[in-house]
Image 1 (cartoon, rainbow, N blue to C red):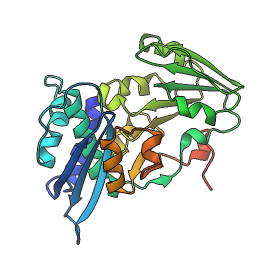
Image 2: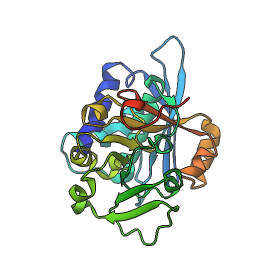
Image 3: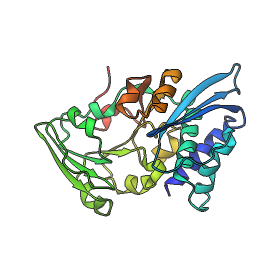
Image 4: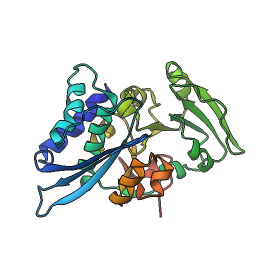
Length: 272
């Protein structure tokens, strides 16, 4: 279960003392994203940080007023209890990301723009429309829960879509697999990680996937491509305005990633 991955992140933060030692500074729920801001008081000085997550459809439930209460949906889901409200779970994921932010050895860059020239077949779990302009001379297979309609791609990029039941066929022969971080909210991440070919480079992508990466590496991911909230005030306003994705990157969110091993060894080029 994907929720076990979230529980593992929570447990690691708890083991390090970052749950009990952190206070909640604020929660902003927009139409497309959730922003959680915290301050870690476990060190020599208070250290504020922020985390984002994809906001799924649905009414906004009453959210907790402490770090512990925001994480309750993550813990109940990991324990196998009744599925939590998806928006509440997204707020819990954003909380994990906020708590994790100061403790991840992030590198600046976008792995979607770092495909090795030898790569010919790419799978994306989730439709990353803006990313297609970063690809060149590759076959892209998209696994998506809902019909995608007409998708424009650059010359040299071929596109074929699959539904989740066709994941095995989509994954066959893939050299690089990009999985949307929103699977941490909707579920299915572990299943997609397990379906990826053993010799493929597997990248979990998106602001939702910005927690401590160890449990995702253990489950089969090679790279976690998350987001760093560099300007919380600007991002808070952007989330309230309904921004997401590229629009957030224009308003104070920086693309970052952490790799299980040097990217040059897994069919991605290294950043300068």
